[in-house]
Image 1 (cartoon, helix red, strand yellow):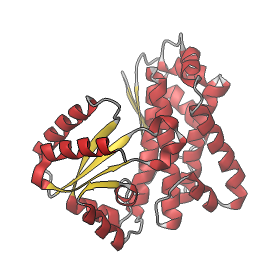
Image 2 (cartoon, helix red, strand yellow):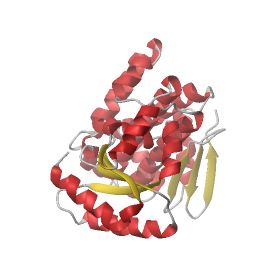
Image 3 (cartoon, rainbow, N blue to C red):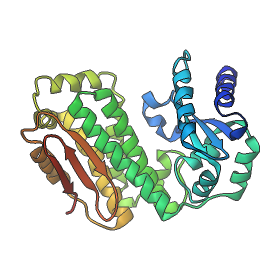
Image 4 (tube, rainbow, N blue to C red):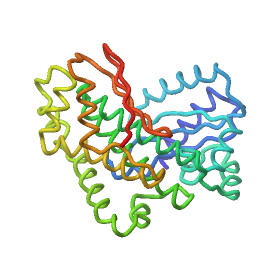
Length: 307
């Protein structure tokens, strides 16, 4: 860890939270190294004795100060110590990554103690991670119809990352270090298909020219439904949208042993719900018993992803 970054972030954390700090660490979701744009993003995890509403004002001010720092792309988060310890023990993300992969800059003994205790992923931890994957895919669609292609690609990375983490948590009771861990536990009869889908998606979202290309495909689309149709008629646009959904569907079914709406029907329902809407906001939740797609615009519509 860069000494300058360590010193600056530690001093900022102490300035805003002082003696309430139990431990502070700098960490990064190295699991998402498959997407170049996420490799520079750091997180500052600050574990506090307790959290009251005023602490979030301090957190906002801290993040404003961090944004002014040159050459540091970081974001601070605060955690209640008791909740953090409980969630680590149950194998939640990000608590496990903070303890197992983080770089302590204050209170290193706290992390050492938790590492010595160990963890085992609970069903709740798996469900939360899986829900993160669905939320990220919903944000992908929302950014696409808003014309924010760069953010859409970033959310694709989060979606395929979280859904594969959830599958590993479900099978192994641990959090994975990298996508290689996932490939090793995928059933042999599905492995080649999953590898192909992951390779294709990761290759596409890392193409230097893909944001501008997809932006050009979407030009001239007046309504959200028209924009999605344009993307689905393009080879790259179709793959960028469809493969991540197919991965969500595959891993949801493996985790919950329930069928999910097929890919073609999903996009038919989505575009149909968006028809004639001049604007819309898309949300997706991967909650049990079945994920729900919500479209908020002049009319609000909800679609259960049942098969």
